[in-house]
Length: 267
Image 1: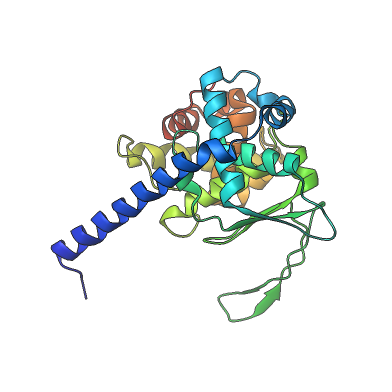
Image 2: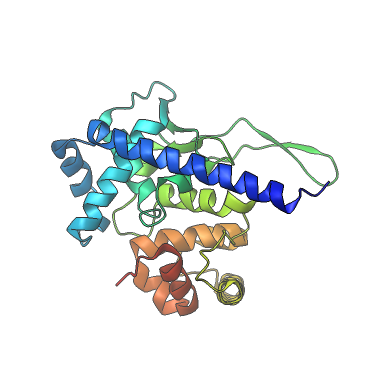
């Protein structure tokens, strides 16, 4: 049954009302939960990609990261004790991509699970033939739709250094991608963006990346990007915030689209 126009409008109004209430509560809680100055400086100075961030944007990031720490549960696995610095580090990296979206963009994340290092998830997958396969590859991060984000602390702490590698931003990119369904490299776009321009830029770059890897086995970004359009989007997001010049030089169309999407022009 297709809901009536009135029912859709009513549902939309209720959804908007709850969003306003949630944002009001966040603003009310902020003074109480804001990261103290010493902790913030400790986290910020340990993430070199923040060195060039404008002071007002850095203050905004601190507030978002503080609310993220307040709202998300953190759990250490295999004896890992998650301290305030670790929570602040993860939260700060997670909030960089949503600096202009707001924390509501990450509402689907229920918790953060931290392993000391790479982990092997105890999960099974069923292929199209109905055959069950147990996954046994080591991972540094994993994002679940409307669930936890699982991370390796060793890889988290290696992120944000300007090397192009950022496991937190990679998984957050998947979370943003899954806001309109399965991750496919095409997240819901702001109204001011042209979906055709996005598709053309990423389709062209994706084909070029696969051609390069097939011809010489080398890419200017992580080769994992060629696994799927979803992974290509996530890896491009890593490099956009870590080494933006690499994306701009190799795929200027993707660089332009990501600049528009995140509303964070990189130089």
